[in-house]
Amino acid sequence: KRSPMPALVVNSGCVLHLEDLRICQLFPREGVDAEALHVAGDGASVVCRRVSFHSRSDCGICISAGHLSLTDCDVSDCGGTGLVLFGGKATLRRTVLQRNQRCGVYVRQGHADFLGGNRMMQNGRSEE
Image (cartoon, rainbow, N blue to C red; front, side, top):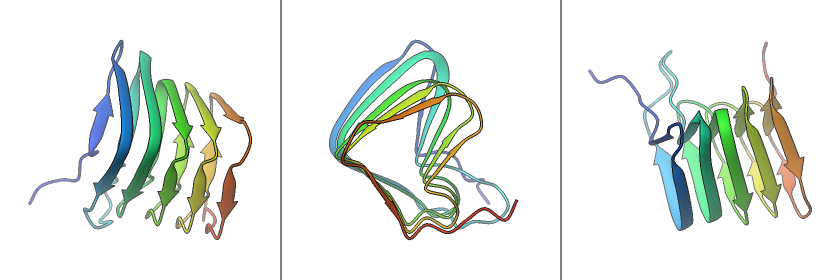
């Protein structure tokens, strides 16, 4: 049996631009979490426009280092939190975070900018 893995991982020094895309991680939640997108390294830069993120087993997006920019994106119906920051930076514009099992956004460490037109609604809450 395969263990869940993130659908997309961006490591140190990598630059990625995504537009008009849907990224789904469909493993069921079975004790091992895997997100749709993991921004995982210092100097990593991900720019998303009109991208939809979904992870059945975990959060939609995890940032442990690097920078993520979301514009006109959707992070919905995830098994965990929509967007988690353990470090790094996220910039959101006109992005929707909804119907996630836990929080819409959870910032443990790092920096998040919400720059107009964002919506967070109908998210659950953390049991922690």
